[in-house]
Figure 1: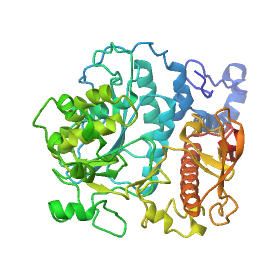
Figure 2: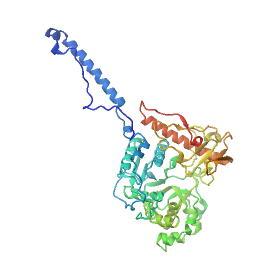
Figure 3: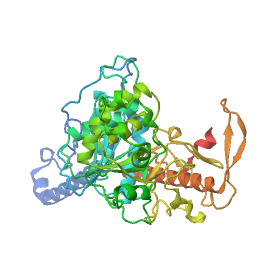
Length: 509
């Protein structure tokens, strides 16, 4: 593994020798008696100075905590080749993560997000943790890392200890077995990585002492916080409830806090399509409330996605049914979003209607999400440095960057971001101009056919420009802030520390 070289000092390989010009064995008694006081003074001064130099060198060049694991990319060197056929589905073990003894108070908020052990979701994790630090997100945050091999887990723990834990003692990592096999015995040979989300949630809950009243917030790793998530949605100027009239007509006043039996979540465009699934087979219960639920109520209370918010008590109930239903759903619907449909079915089966919010997240520039807050912003401010990303006003809580965003000569796609973005040597991302949205010069995006050949530009509407610009500018700023923090905290003198804002994947394509 490539790592930084440091000067190491140890008792067995470092020795300071002095040649005493006033050695008694070579001096006459008269010389010794005459100069003994002066000899002692000079020698003492010489030894003190030498020791001071030695201590200074130890301070300047001794290994730092980051020397053990300098780069995220170093993890790849210990990653073993993946088997062609996944192993048999592992049962939950009794292994505990470092946060097993968390002393969570009932009023705490605990954010969690599920990842694998690869570099792609490691850089996202670092930026997510750093962003939580910047906005002062209260409570605890835990990364649930699934499927690490033994050596990977050791390196990942070292990475967390060296680079994440110093940010906050409330930032944790929890390791689970691999859960992505489409059959429990692993014989199918097929995988679906998003199984790790429900199984990881259940494993974390069952292997940690989480107070049942704690508010658990389930995110995805590609969720960057714009403002803190807290258990108070009473301010109607900054929280947009989806279908408030339908809720009040059927269930009374719309709740403003997560409580037992009342989870919250971001509304997604899942609709009630899951009602057409074979719910008798999936639930193995002909009396399941999910079966008798009307299509209207299915669409009003259940098509939710991350951020999911629930009490730990409800989270455990949902996780158990989510795990039970997710593979049968995959058998019928082996496609993307299958695990989200399984969540809807699990919540409906448990009769846990959600308060759906539009304002928790923005992602799809053409969807009905928390865009009202963005559309209302002054165009002059959207890309101005340190304006929006540090704004505590009416904004969505989360940037969910699951798509490609393009505007002029700037673009953002998470799979294009280098895995070593958080290193000393890698340049920062090129910052879009402050007038990216306001000038009108960049209201287009380039297009290409399947071969990659350019076929002209597509003009963006004013709304598309605002939303694409908002996502690009803020995602770049958030990643650059995290990269600068990494360099300032972990890069030592003598290394090449690159603060140049020159990396632009759109221009490299």
